[in-house]
Structure formats: C-alpha cells, structure tokens
Length: 387
Image (cartoon, rainbow, N blue to C red; front, side, top):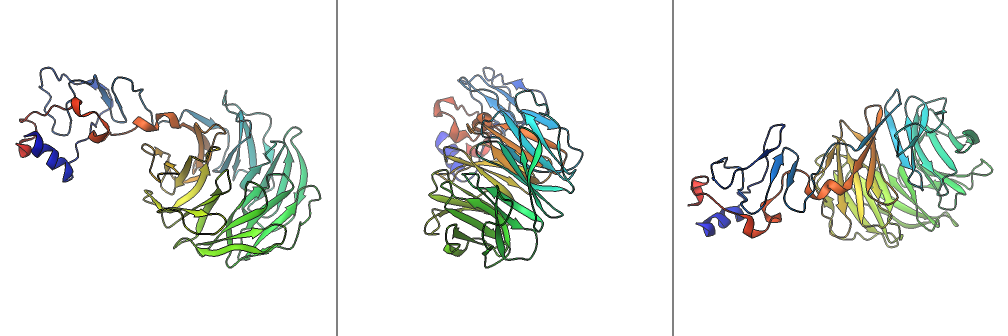
C-alpha cells in the first residue's frame, strides 16, 4: 500500500498540510479520527495548523503579514530606499513629498521634504548624507539630509529612474520621454557631467557598477547596454534580454553579475563584463515584474510584481525562497535592509511595508517532501485510491 501511495505522489498527487479557516487547531492523530483527505497525518511531529503556517519541533510560526507599516503619505508611494546605516528609510510619493522614517519606532524623522511635483524616484548617497529625487513634472533635486535643505537643483526633463554613483560625484537618470539617452549630472556643480550617453532605445532604468566605472541602462525595447563612464562608450551590448521592456536592473555587490527584470514576467542574470546570460531565467512571477533589490552579500534578490507578489530568490540556485509576501495591489519598489533580513516595499496605497524574511522558510502550505519520512502514517480509509 505504501509503495502505491508513493507512486501516486510521484504522479502528482501532492498532499499538502494546509487547511482553510482562521483559527489554528490540533490534529488528534492518536485516535486517527481526522479523515480530511487533504491532510497528511504526522504522528511523530507535534503540529498545529493555520491557513498560513505549519509548525513542528524546532520550527517557528511564520507570518505573511508585514512586520511594520509606515503611514504618513497622502498619496501613492512610488519609491522606497534604505539609508546605509539601516536605521532609517526614505519614501517618495505622488503627494510631492519625501518622508524619512525611523525604522525602529516607525515614526517620521523630521519634516517631509516638499517638492513642486510628484516624486517619481529617489536615491541615497552611500554616505547617507544626501537624497536625490526625480520629479514627474521635470527636474532633479539633491537634498542635504542633516539640514533638510536643497543642496542642488538639477534642471532637465522628467525623471523615471535615477542612481547615485558609489563615490557620490554623479547622478545618472533615465528620462521620462522618448529620448534615447541616459543623462549624467555632477552633484557638486549641478551641471551636466558630460554629453548624454546615447542608447539604442529609450531608457527605463539605470544602475552604477559597484566600483563606479560603468553605468548599465535597461531599455524600452527589452535590451540593456553598459557604458564606460570615462569614455562614454558602450562596452557591453546592446543585449536583447527580454521580450518586453526592462523594468529594473541591479548589479551584484561584487560587480560580476547584472540582474534584469521585465514585464515579460522573467528575471535574468548576466555576466556584467561580457553580457552572456548566466544560468536559466528566474521564473515564478505570474505577472509583470516591476522592481528588484539585491542583498549586500549577493546571495538573494527580491522582486516585486504587478499584482502584489514580493518574491525572494536564491541567486545561486535560481530557486524561490519560501512563499511570496502578498501586498495589496501593484508593487512599485522593494529594497533589502543592509543586513539582508528585512524588505521594504511600496505600492498603490499610501503606506510603506516592512517584511521579515526570516519567516520565509516555513510560510504557506508545506510539501510533504520537506518533511522526514518517519513522520508519515497513512490510513487506508483516508485515501482509498492508494490501496
């Protein structure tokens, strides 16, 4: 009988320890009276179950709920970024403000930074002293964090995405128009640092390499290019990476890899120097992928989807880590905390959410293949098909 049961499992008859309802309950496996055929009976594992979690000895209850919610904006939040020290974060909104938050107590740190138009995107310098903000109506502002005063106003077109160079000298931005360029500004002078970098298609997103020598640009036609900052020349690409536009791209901390996401529902990993794809695509999103973030150790990436899924991936294995966090509506921005434990996100509502990734390993329904063989006992009255 057990052999037939295992064969049935191999044929796709997956039994998951998952139930509906709102209250946890215990299984009385000693009497073997609970006969729901969707449940695996575990006489050697003391268990309690709820819709989103499963526990056995040595396991801690997981939660799909955010650890903390930051509320203060009056309009949709478009971008979130951690400060390098991890003690604060900043959020940008269509309500024309940037709010700096204390992560520990969840409160605003000082007054919001007021803008003349909706704030589309923000970036923070690696020393944490300045915030650059791109406005939907046009222009780019650099703020002094300590004084909350404007440090520079950089004139230009509307900004879609921007990035701070590692040394804090330059800001790169992808314009929100049909221009096929990436623009660079000198932070200290407020003027253009050089002629715009000419791309094969309109730019959507940009990222500096960790050593600051290169800029990668994700493009509207689904390709990406990498430029040498000193010469302005293309050194990689254009590489046709996706079937739809590149919505986000990030470098690995060591600069060896470039990770791209797209509305074609895929994430792909590339050799940053050659442009050759590394391994298989990362698949799992059932909708457009909007945003990416990578941990400081380069081991994991987080991705946010069009319909609210926030997924975490192992960059080496390309496998998803646990079940996704589920936000309400589209996810516009995600960012890992400096130590890699937490993820912040924002979307269509007016709030910022903080998620604890330590719960990922045991979230959701658990496949029986993740449990020890000695835990299984099968009643022939439960699954007559396997007799």
